[in-house]
Structures are given as structure tokens and as C-alpha cells.
Amino acid sequence: MGDWGPVFVSVVLFILLTPGLLVQIPGRGSFIEFGNFQTSGLSILIHAILYFALVCIFMLAIGIHMDVTSFPCNALFPPFNKFLGIIKLVN
Image 1 (cartoon, rainbow, N blue to C red):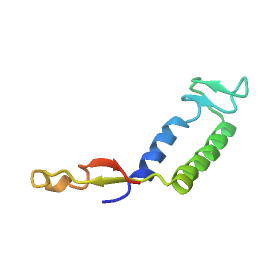
Image 2: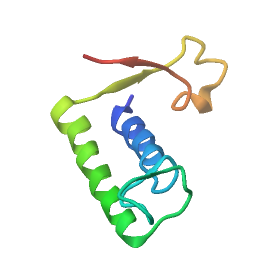
Image 3: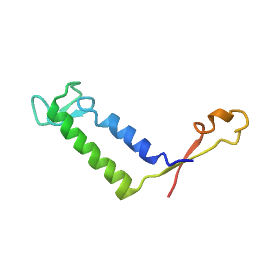
Image 4: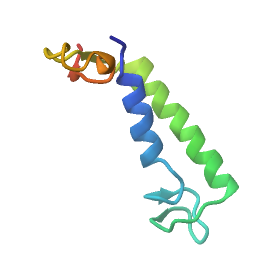
């Protein structure tokens, strides 16, 4: 099956780097603000650049890979074989 490492890294970083959710750089009142649930155009641009840089580091430099293998009970759920699996980290 496919490599799910890039998908996992991208989703986690997207959630963590959403402007205003956990942190906002630059904030409205100071350089950095935590949990204010507000955003600005400049903040979206800064967070997009950080997201791109971290995704490149995790996928290209470090090379995170996750291999998804099927469950042994494939006969019970044949249409869902692509979605059911055990995630294991690949060296």
C-alpha cells in the first residue's frame, strides 16, 4: 500500500499551524499571541511559509515514512481493504 507519512505530517502540521488556533505570528497586539482565534493576512502568509518549510524538512530532509498494511481479516471487509490497516513506521 501507499506511503502515508507525508499525509500524516501534512495534516498534523496544518492543524498545529492554523493561524490563531494555538499561536499567531505576528499577533494583533504583539509579535506573538497564543490562542486568540483571530488572524490577519500577514499572519496567514507567515504561517504558510512556516508550514512549507516544516513540510520540506520533515519529508525531504528527515524522510518520514509510514507503511500501511492490511488486516489479516481481509475476507470480512473486501471493499474496505484500502482503508483498514495497521500503521507501522518504516526505517
